[in-house]
Length: 406
Image 1 (cartoon, rainbow, N blue to C red):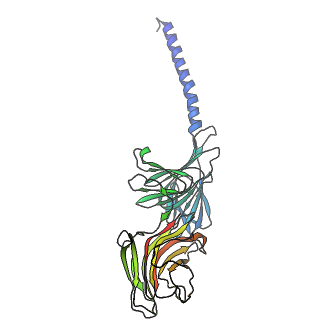
Image 2: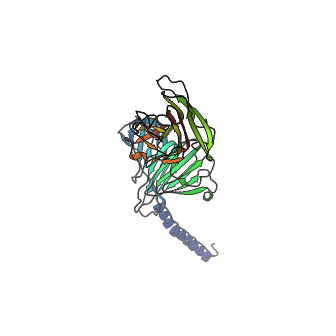
Image 3: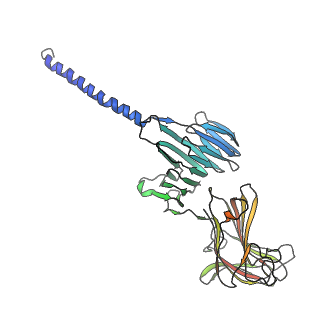
């Protein structure tokens, strides 16, 4: 170097230039990266609506009870759980919310906004539902978009803005129902996201079974009845029995699974029971909470009445040759029932409340009005469905019964 000072000068100059260029490029890029990607952790507000919610703080491993009417702000990572008597709502920084129904638990994994206003990145809300039922409500995004992700062991669901979404998570599957908005639903463990993602639009739903991709979107309306078309043996979902009442009758009716005019049906038959009461019944325990928000409940069935010896529905309007009864629990926890009967003759002019006449010996398709518009108190849970014949002697049939909710 002493013999060639010019080379030394060039080496120093070029090295300095390289360092300068590296700094001139890397510093702005680093600043840009920070401006675009730096985030700020946000909190969510938990409000207990019923019972007691439990908040688990991951930072110190403590659990805090939250009583009805109380609210508390919590950080990322908080686990919110409610038992069978409790409900709670989680409100996020953008005013979107998630309502937890009884026996539900969620982890508030991520609640972040960009730290700087120059960032083009969206804010993020990500929760994991460990099980139960929840209702997610997203809001209009405005100038700052928010990515909202709901995870379960079966599915990852991205929610669009201004939407309403119901999630029902069990060990076997996750069901996603879109009341409004749109959702991108993907299998949680998919290797190829494109092949295992479906788009669910308003008034649609999909199911993600364990270890399988989402099903093709279905209508949001769901049938709560198992084996309502009677394609399986009657003991699949149904219990058949007789109730004689208190008038000392001993003649039971019969229940049989038949094919009539090309359709599978259940036949109720009783003969020789004049002047004493009997009910011949098929009954199904449903025990399902209704979705919220709830827009429609309808009973649909094909029915036929062939014979009835008691006029109309008897003198109390309670003994029709074919009847459908839905037992439900209302929003106050009280049990109530909805009943509808069918008959073809009323020679004695008995009262015929909660019923309708149909043509004797002909199949008749029945669809109820929306029960939400006629029930005195809104139902919360469907307990039981009963289809039965009542009175003295009777013969009637039922086919394709459903209890559709949306």
